[in-house]
View 1: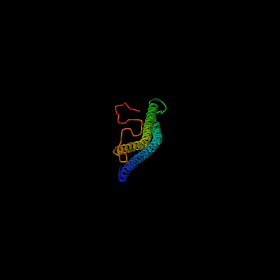
View 2: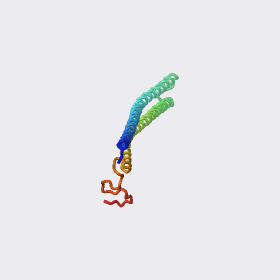
View 3: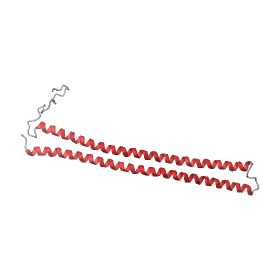
View 4: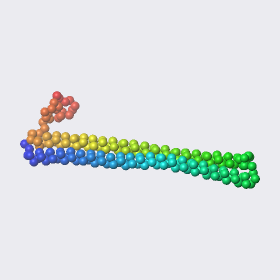
Length: 190
């Protein structure tokens, strides 16, 4: 027969193991939730940057077109002041070429800012995925800790039963179940 103090200590050991597992699970959950919140904040910032890049791109594209228009008008004024007919020949070709190159520059600016927008959007999607993963890991961490704690308690309980800590004379191999756990060959008796 076992002493009450030994049984009490055994039970306290199991309770401490369960509490430790619970705290570990809670800690993992809290850490994962924090990481998920950081990722969600980064997602928000990336989405804002994507919108800003479109606004900046639109403005830069418009600025390029104004700059091109200014160059074309300056060339027209200079051509007219020098007595050249600005509406035909090479004078017209110069301004047409300047307009085409200016439009190409404006479209290049648009493309560059659209690419920035896409990069930020992809970054936001990656942060959203990371946040979801972090949240799932927190939940799995809790489940893992609970299962680990249950396994630990089960192992301790079996060990204490085998040693007779709870007042029995030790584990006999068939403790009230239909399974013979001592027969580990795979041929269980019922």
